[in-house]
Length: 160
Image 1: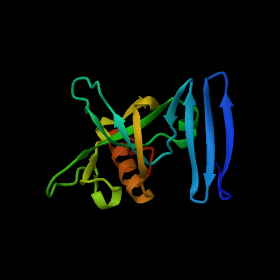
Image 2 (image 1 turned 30 degrees about the vertical axis):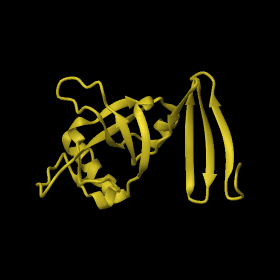
Image 3 (image 1 turned 90 degrees about the vertical axis):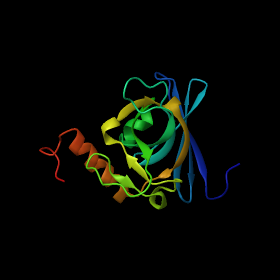
């Protein structure tokens, strides 16, 4: 049941088999995407989510781990895929790497400090998303953006 501060609205795209149920609350907007009979997480750019990355191939990062969604929110709205940067926990004092910026546990609300593996960026099906942790502040997302720009050699096209 909706509280007075919330309203719901249904949207659909019959040609793609995707529908969204939107719930607006006092704190913003959250969505659940329905793809056929499966419920898929709706994620915005900067969302921190648990993702099952198995099966991995070769040097790909395996297992279920936190990832940051870096694809644009408008694309995430209509697509069954999202682009993510996996995180890997670090212990002790570690050097900052340009394409693997450090994110502290306090900043991310994760149990350990992490490194954003911008050199492992990948597009995944939304069905791999297991749970949402939250949304990163813009300062943290900017660190990841800078890592992606450097990894993809886009410095000539984007001001750092």
